[in-house]
Amino acid sequence: MRFVTPVEHRLWPCIAICEHGRACRDCCWPWTGTLTRNGLPMILVKRKDTWRNVSASRLVWEMEHKEILPAHLMALHTCRNVTCCNPSHLMQGTKQDWALHIKDQDWTKRFWQHVRICLHGIECPYCCWEWQGPRHSWGYGIFNLKVDGQWKHLRASRVIWEIWHGHPLPEPLWALHHCDNPCCCNIMHLYPGTPAMNTRDMCIRGRASTTHVQRGESHGRAKLAAVDIPDIWKLHAQGLSAEAIAQRIGKSSTSSIKHVLHLRSWGHISRPLIAGES
Image (cartoon, rainbow, N blue to C red; front, side, top):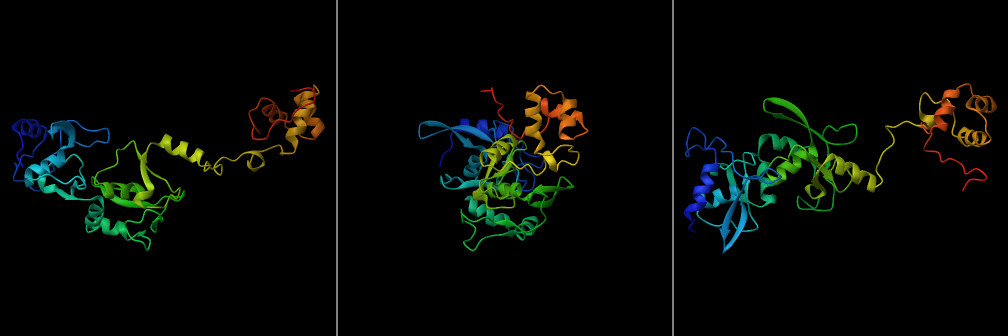
């Protein structure tokens, strides 16, 4: 394949080649040009009379090997640096090939030892692959990994997403679960999203937990009972003050009754419909 000169002239100036020169096989050469919103290096290339955005790392691989990379294959990073354009750090393959390749590395061997893959194998889109290692109190898998010289506790779902896709998940995003199983590490069950998307999905799917919000009689400082609330509203409709209501129902705390009448507490119990109201 013959690459036109203008592409080379636009490509290489955007690659920060290390001080050791083009013969270096160890250092990463970060891309300094245009990035997608996911942090992937992109460059505009004319192919088949059509201008299109092409992965810069893909183009570097093709120029190095002097052949077009088939559409079903990717230029994957063995260094896990998504902006790296050092040809020595690039390999061709599918996402499945990347997952199998990365399993051979030391820390990933330790990671995969904690993942219970189902009997259908690594391409199964249905079963959950539950994390067998340490878990967060909410059930999320925790994996200890040394990053920039410091040990960090990472969510296993985030780590498996980065392993599978071959590049880090941008920091504002989380690895969310389609399956609602927090310890699942099946990449088919994961998708990137923001904390706000996670909260929205939790509410839509009816998973919004109230176990961490103590209310009503379960609250340690509750002075009233659930059966008192309808009576409080009925007596209030009769014109009784909070002090009179407290005496009537046999409670000493008038402030608790005022909180009910001002809708500051016990709001989860519906106010009864009083005669004459509509």
